[in-house]
View 1 (cartoon, rainbow, N blue to C red):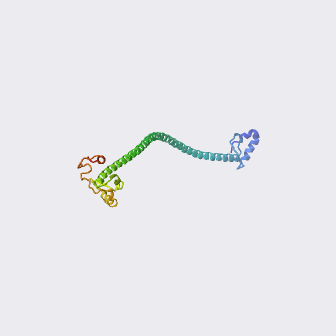
View 2 (tube, helix red, strand yellow):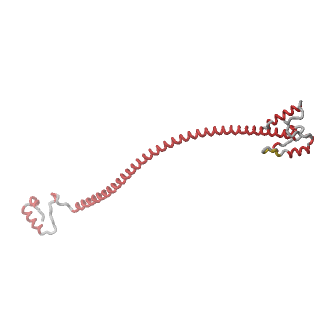
View 3 (tube, one colour):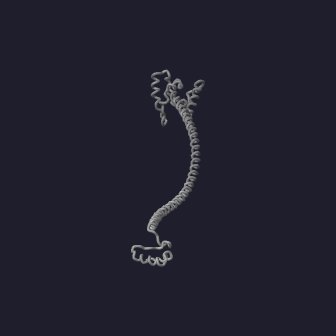
Length: 244
């Protein structure tokens, strides 16, 4: 039985003694002094127990949440570290790229300068090429003209030797382009002379020319028109490249 001395001042000695006797024969009843806080009613205890369980549940939930947050923080720290490393790498790459770009820009500038120089050279070369082609054309025309004069001089002598009364007139009736000369041999003239002698015999004389050519020494001294004609023929032969 609990200590009930705290009831003695309230009940008195006699009543207190009688009360103890009766309480000793009353099983299932327990008296306690609630004033010292040692006794907690069941309802209050249940309420506090439920609150404690709820608190513990909240603590457990917060602990789990904290563990989750700690994991997230760790993940974020790792991501931050990786991002920092990636940022540093990007900075290094950016610096390297900037140096590469600067180098490429310098090379492009140099190449542009070389291209401009090459363009000027090509333009000048084109100008020189055009001038060279023009001069080559002039030279070709001059060579052709000289060759024509030489051929005409040679043909004039041959027409004279063939008995032409007037080589200049007969020359106009000859197709010079069909007359060729190779290794001192002339081809393409005899056929034309033969045809002209048949169609226009009056252009020729029956008197044969000296075999020595127009520069042969005449049987008697020439004078007047004959002397002039001889001199002209000599000049023609000189122009044609013959030694006279």
